[in-house]
Every structure is written in structure tokens, then in C-alpha cells.
Image 1 (tube, rainbow, N blue to C red):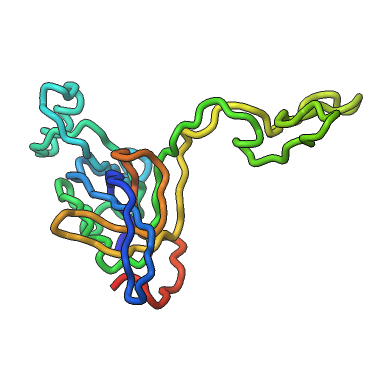
Image 2 (cartoon, rainbow, N blue to C red):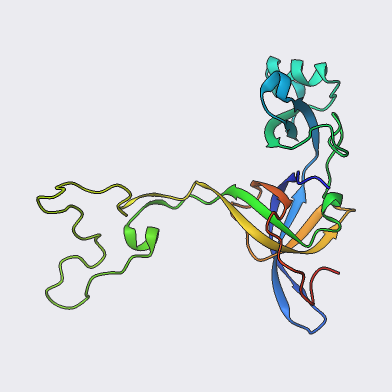
Length: 222
């Protein structure tokens, strides 16, 4: 089985009850309609990859370049978003041009990796952004939540790189590894995974079989 995943939309969070009556928080992810719209080869592009098209709209909302590329590859659907996924062999089974991708690829998968853009938190200080310690709350303290001294003395006499300072927090791409798959619903094309994932509701995420899968434990996916 190749390690290529699919694009899913974050529906929201819920909970499931196991055989012991314990409640487990889960995130519901629904795979949107998506198709392999292009193949990239080493001879022509310098690397092996596939392009997945998703988020279908009316043809009038597509640019001419997208329409030309889709129709050239005999893709009748009108996708407006595309993502590339590196593969070892783009000619392997299941990666045919024009083939649709569903949650069925996770039917026998115990854990997955989820990649997405975290929520934006705006401009934040070092306490919230990096979980640094605060100053004393007693009389005489002048830097309760401030970062404190930044520079050095004569040598080197400058602020060092990677110094933790206030700034924009969030809106960066992160990957959460080894999230356990609890249920795969082929009828609604939805997958339920344990715990939370990055991103906002209705945001798009990339799911793939875990590259560092842990041994399965009792009480996992049935």
C-alpha cells in the first residue's frame, strides 16, 4: 500500500463510547470529493508526485489554466483547489489519473498523521506564545508578563537569533502524528479519529497513513 492520503474537511468534535463505557473525544473528518488530476514524473518534472484536485465549484469560477489542464487530462469535474503529494512511484496501483479517493484507503489503517494550518491567535506575548514564566506579582516587580532583558553585555552586544519575543501566533502548518482511527464510515465518507486536530471547523486537512505507527493496543478500531 502506498503512503498517499487524501484531503478531508473538519466537521467538528464529538465523543464515542467504548465497550467499557468510557467516553473518548473524537474529531469527525469528512473526505470531500477529490480526484487525481495530474501526474508528475522524474523525466519531465524532476520528481515523482501526484496532484489531487478538490473543492468543486461552477466552471465559471475557474481560471482558464485550470480548465485547460483538467480537460486535457479528461477530468470533467471543476476543482478549484489542488495539492501535490510526493510519491516513490506515481504508476503504482490506486494512483491512476482520474481516479477518485475516499476514506476506504483507511479501512485497515490503525493510525494516521494529520497536517493542517492552526488557528490564528493574533499578536501575543511570550507567556502565551511560548509558555514562558512570568515575573513576580509582588511589590517591586516591573515585568509581570514582559519578556525581560533581550540583549547581552559588551560581547556579543546584540540580540541572539531565535530569541523568544512577542509576535504573531498561529496560522502555521503543523503535523500531528499517530492519531488513532476509531471508525471509518464508507457511506458518509467520514472518518473518526481520537483527540483533536489543527485547524478551524470546515477547514481542509491532509490525512495519510502514519509513518511512525505505534503497535496497536486493545480497545482500538474494530
